[in-house]
Length: 212
Image 1: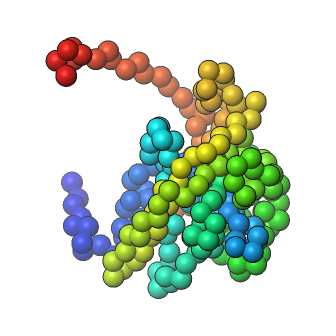
Image 2: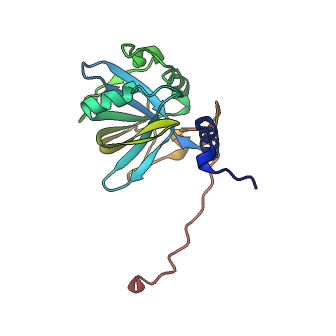
């Protein structure tokens, strides 16, 4: 087995190992507003749900080699402390990929990608109408992760409102995975879908509750 000391890796080497090994990763398609009301939409694949109660999701804003200027998503969230995390599906994958393009701050990525802004209920940033699940969020905390080789900003977000399309809702607060058709990120340019499903039943607890 090949081994790598993390402290000896370059940023590119670390990225390739992590992004191709920790897979598939869901994609946070994050919509924000600038302080003056400009719309922004960008995808982040270092993303997941981190807590059920209080409902919390986390994504990481990473920066390109040699560039530590804040990204629009980071600037907007620090100014407004709000965002919407939209879930990416097969139907929206191409539009999501367009919003990964580095564009001037004044460009509206909703228009650039051809998706529809939809008013939110609690927060100011719009949702992506074409996304079947949207999480309205307020920024709980931003944590900067940085060394001499690179920087990421970990955005810890409190979920304040959840929208679920009737087409993917299975009832009883559950999403139908066979209808959602979510897209996951792999290493490099590779993505995957969730069409191949299998089930496993968790074994019952072997611990007597009185022993805890």
